[in-house]
Length: 394
Ligand code: GDP
Ligand code: MN
Image 1 (cartoon, rainbow, N blue to C red):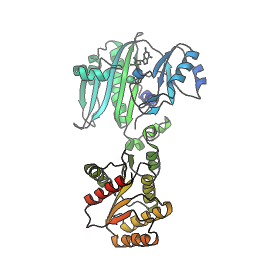
Image 2: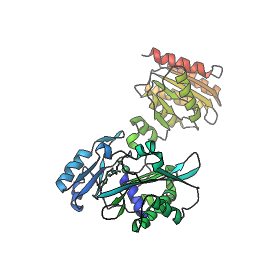
Image 3: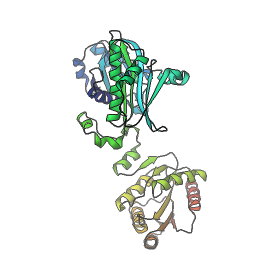
Image 4: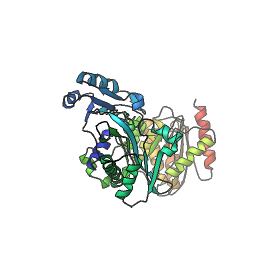
């Protein structure tokens, strides 16, 4: 879970890292501008970097100027969603910008500390055109960082005298908070040396392992609670998340109602392989309740882009009769009239088939475009038929 800069800075402050005191302001919070000393820097809060280059980092010398600049930043779109708040901090004069980060190196199964003397808004460019400017140090998982290593690293950044001590503390602090909070990424860019000889964390980025957040109740005290990156979810994904359904919108026209996640992915590949376009990924396995199954169908059938549904129920722990009941109830209640081509096999299949047959007899018109094949129908054929059905609907 990515944190906003102002949240990351709260975490940093707890580890004694040198962040500036700031206020967070949204469109209702302008009165807080009375509390700050000018000049200030105004920073739009977004999950995605590159704000400096997108005009989301602004300076102001007075309250009026600050208010005007904040208004110009709020509501701007960055990385797919609108800026809702800004962080306002005292402006400092930067002499040098350094880069520091710790990430998980998934290939090496170790942590990776990266540093550069060439921090700032062009770090990506530096990293790709002058890779020797980005220094990398691996650390074994479970090992603490020794102070001498931090000191050597700080010295490698060109820090000396009192700044060397300050840099050593920042590197140790960053690494310890990375480990301490189960981070995936902890980054400082820039770590600034100011013209008055201070070393300051001007930008902070933290990506937490969401699954480990329960280990850190203190985050809640800082106002950081597990949330999904709502700004990035589509409306349907938000509904799905609320209902506890793993669901991702794709841009095709075939709704995928697959059973488990593994088959969901295979179904997406197969649909594409045969020339169709999946409208979603969904995990509908794990013995979902009737209610959840109906919610799943709703997600697919309410999507105006969806022309046809591909469905599969391999009855294991998820029973065919439960699945059939949910399908029938959804269709009878909602009368979707979109073609659904499905296959059902396995646990309680016979009972499931009876439920479908009976519904077909009672509501022939509603079930006219709904087919439920059995095990003798290869899944590839079911998929091809769904693709044909979707094309015919256009
Ligand atoms: P990012 O572009 O999203 O990474 O946003 P940053 O928070 O890193 O800000 C971008 C750039 O703005 C920094 O690299 C600095 O050069 C500049 N900046 C941020 N705060 C200050 C400040 O207080 N004083 C000055 N002079 N520049 C700042
Ligand atoms: Mn930055």
